[in-house]
Image 1: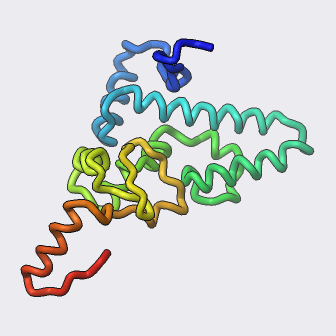
Image 2: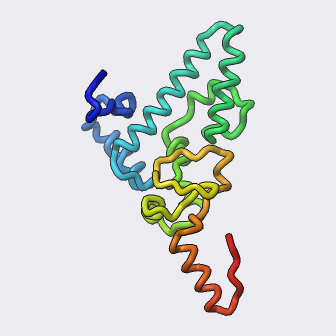
Image 3: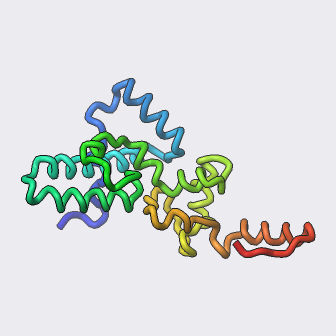
Amino acid sequence: MGDPKRPKKKYVEGKPKRLWNSDLLMSELRLIGEYGLRNKKELWLARALLRSIKHRAREILSAPMEIRGEAEKRLKDRLFRMGLISDINIPLDSVLALDVTAVLERRLQTLVYRKGMARSIHEARQLIVHGHISINGVRVRSPGYLVPRNLEDGIGFAPTSRIVKAKVTQQVNQGGQAVNQ
């Protein structure tokens, strides 16, 4: 049953065994700064997801050929839809070569910054948390949301956002006509 006040940690698999390893600390700090993560738990969540994907790939590689073909196709299709691999026809061994940056690149916060909607990765996080970003018209307030490949083009400002309203009024004041985005 468990205590409802204390949910199970989702990053247990991603948490390093030696927390005070200096090389690990420096690499984690670099990733946290580069991707604008709030704390190490967000990094550990990404590592846990990647670890489960790699574990599944290893299971498939060791499975008999009858089972392997269909399971390999399903895993590659899922990873392609998630945007973690660029081509569905790559060998399964290359899935084992994925690193945590592949997962961090699919976060909404990173994609908002890469699309140029924010001047910095930290501003992208703030825009998302404050509700200025939507995906296909649905407001998303979680910077850690992993954006699937098919929704990537739908990232934009929320229609009711003050930022959109400010841009429209600025265009009208400059003599241009208001254009909906």
